[in-house]
Image (cartoon, rainbow, N blue to C red; front, top):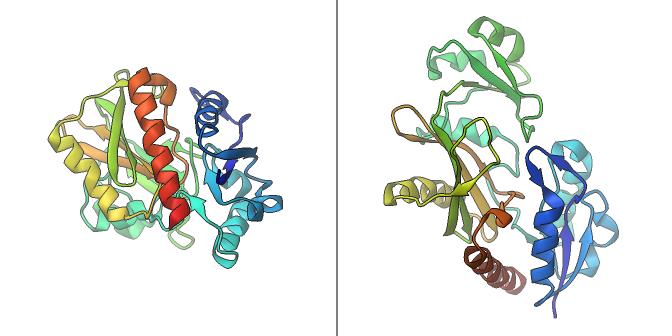
Length: 274
């Protein structure tokens, strides 16, 4: 059996989610085909060279251990470490800069800027959202007026993002493994982001989600396309999570959950053979 270093923070307190439940379930299934050891994300350096593949899962926001994460990314390159996901994505694994790139490329994304010189790219609304580029899990997010944007957005450092507040109908997430769609979940009550139900996407929905997966062109791994449906019925990208997306596996039917596990096992084998 090949060996996996399964990286997760079982004790991280995420809003509305229990990381340990999902990862204990997932590791129990992966043990059927792999030898596996669980490791905290800040402790990988001690063990990473002794395993065939490093599986980076529910590690929590990497902004909480930014220096160690960057050092890990550097070792992935210098020591030729095999990781899952592959670290060649262009989205969340590198911060939120990609939201500006997608805005400028006219993708269906919530308009995003990092300098007041680009304020004309945002609609004129009463409320805006500002958040740090390296943020996650709503850390550092604030709701501000247009006048307050001038105090919050530093056009020199460009370390803060600004977006219009979208009065959306609901949020929906599309989950992919190696560019292949697996399932979708949505939050019918927009005040309860993590109370999810299974969602049956339309062809138009899948075309929307696949556009971002194709843009990212990740070699292998799991991605979650988070979107909101606005008042016009259009889907807009909220974020493309390509580092360690929470999977909400325990919210799925037993059949879909097992199908996902089997697909992930095949994907891990692909990563090992690459």
